[in-house]
Amino acid sequence: MVKTFADFKYLSFDVVGTLIDFEGGIKDCLAGIAAEAGVKLDGEEALTLYRQARYFENADLFPDDLVRVYLAIAPRLGLPAQPAYGERLRDSAKNWKGFADSKDALARLSKKYRLIAMTNSRRWAFAHFAKELGNPFYAAFTADDTGTEKPDPAFFETVFDFVAKEGSTKEDILHVAQSQYHDIGISRRLGMTNCWIERRHAQKGYGGTIEPEQFTEPDFHFTSMAGLSNAVEEAEA
Image (tube, rainbow, N blue to C red):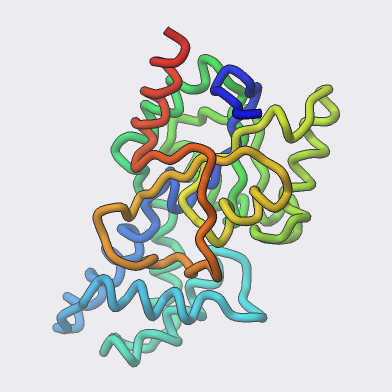
């Protein structure tokens, strides 16, 4: 049965990449370091190197792992390979901005749904992200809370257990995310309904997000959060 927006009680969200512009935040921080070092930075190259370094078997939790990542990619970008700069990249997460449409869209959607954050970031970073977004969330789950990262099914199971305590099931959740690898593919395999926010629709490649082994056709597809919130309101009207 094809679901409509009226069938859901909850919207669960990936945060970093869907609501928070982490690619812009990383590029801005690295560009600042590059300018101080007198080096010209290619932002997309930096994201490619970031992606290759970030997805490491023994990586630390995000964004703490940005210290290690910086030290791994700095030599290839011609940047100073010093821990202080890695710490600067890590700490820049406190100032990363939401996409221009995120805050308003979440405020509109919160009038109809209970919004649940599902982020691979640590709780300290999520606190800054939530504030940047206007603190719209009914509940939030971080890597600290779940002890794992998406696409681990255990992360999703934690959320299923939470809504079960409220008398609901995963059938009552629409999962909203930009990452095919971390969210869209696994949510489909777990039997969730999903909504792909294709943030990089005007750009080639997957940027700072790992490329999935195969593309998953989403249940709903928009290129912005504004597109989703507009569609919900139009359907309700």
